[in-house]
Image (cartoon, rainbow over all chains, first blue to last red; front, side, top):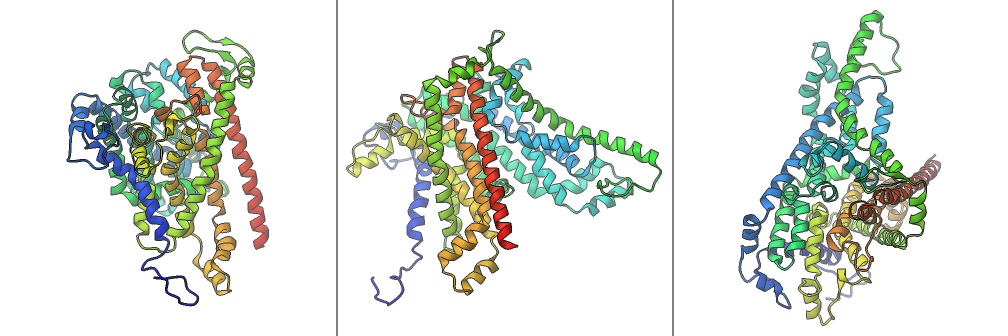
Length: 280
Length: 316
C-alpha cells in the first residue's frame, strides 16, 4: 500500500495512532479479561503446563467453593457495611461541616479550616501506630468499629463541599432566611438539592477508598470473621494458593462491585477523580 | 440584614447591637454543632496521632507493656540499620521509575486521545479501568498471572520461545515488576487528569498559533504544555507522594521479598510495629519518611511559585 504520493505519508484506512493505542488498550484490558476467564476454569486446566488460555467450558467450582465453604459472604457483608456507613456519614458530616465553613461565622473557624486542610498532607504511616493505640483504648480493635470510626468523615469531604457551597449564589438562601427558615432547613431543602455533583463526588471517592482499603483493616483486625473483602482475599490466597480458580472467583467478587459501579456511572467517576486533581 | 451572615468587610449592622450579638452567638453555637463531629474525628485521629507518633519515636514500645524513654536511640539505630537503608533505596528506586513513567505515558496518551480520534472514549475507559481495581485484587491477580510455574505470562513466553522468568520471585526483577503493575493501574489516572486539563486549554490560543504558522510540535511545546504546567506539577506531587507510600501492593505480592528486594519504607514501618513489636523504632522510621515527604512537597511548592512568577513575567 505504499502510495507514492509526493508529500503525504502512506495512507491507512484509519489514523496511525490506533497502531499505538489498540495494542496498549489491549494490554491494559487483558489482565482483567484473564481474571474473568480463569475464575470459570477448572483447577486441572489452570494447573497444567502450559496452562490453558481459554476455558473449555464454564466451571463454577471456584464460585461454589468461595460462596459455600469460605467466609466470602461474611467478608462481603463487612465491606458493604463499612463502605455504606462511610459514604452516608461523609455525606452528612461533610455537608454540615462544609456548610458551616462556607456560610457561617464563628470564632476560630479560619484556624480550624487551615488545621483541617493541613491534616490532608499527613501521611498514613505517621498516624497508623497511634491510631491503632487509640482504637485499642476505645475497645474497638478487631471490630468493624475500628474501620468505621476513622472513616466517618475526611477533611477532603468537608473541604470539597465547602468549596462547592461557596460557588452557589447566596441569594437563594437569603430568600429562605427572610422567610424565617432555620439553618438546618435552608441547608437541607435549598442547598443540598443543588449540590448533587459535589455530593456524588464525595460518595464515589469515599466508596472507592473504603471498599479498596487494605492496610488499615490489616492493622486493626485479627479474626477472619471480621475481615473485609480485601483482607479476606489476601489471606485466602495465602491459604489456598493451589486452588487458583477459587482464588480468582473470590477476586472477581472483590472487584465486581467497584467495576460495575464504575461502568454504570463512568462520567461521575471520572469527574470525581479529576476534581481531586484540578484543584491542586 | 443583620440576620444574614455578613462578610467581614461589611460595615456594622444598623440594627441595635444587643439582639444581633445574641443572634451571632446562637449562630456560632449552631456552626460549632455543625463542625464538631468532623473536628473530633479529623483532628482527633490525625493531630493527636501525629504528636503521639513523635513521642513514640523517642521511646521503646512493644505496644503492650509501658514504653520507656530512650532519647535519640531509635534514630541512631536507624542510621546504622542496613535493612532500613535498603528500604529507602528500594522506595527511591520505585518512585524514580514509577513517577516519570506514569506521568510521561499519561501525557502522551492524553495528547493522542485529545485529537478527536475514533474510539477515544473506549480507549480512555480501557486505560482507566485498572485504576478502580484495589491493590489487593491487583496483587492477587498478578501473582497468579506471573506465577513462575503456572502463570499465563510464562506460558506465553514459552510459546514465544523465551525461557521462563522468575518475575516476583526473582530478586533482580521483583521491584521492576511492581513498577509495571503500578503503571498498569496508575497510568489511567494521569491520562484522565491530563485529558481534563487539555480540554481547558483555550482553543483560540492553539488556533492562533497555528494560523501564525507554528508547526504542531511548536504549538505543543510553547502553548499547550505551558498552559497545563500546573496540572503537571500537581501530578508530580501526587504521584510522588503515593509512590513513596506504596504498601498494599507489596504486602499482597512479595511481603518485602525476595531477599528484601521489595521492602519499601512503609512496609518496613509496618513490619517493625506490628510484626516485631518495636513500635517506637517503626515510628522513628515513619517520621524519617514524613519529613522527607514534607521536604519534597515544600521544594515543589517553591518550584511552582517560581514558575508562576515566570509565566506572569512573560505575560505582563
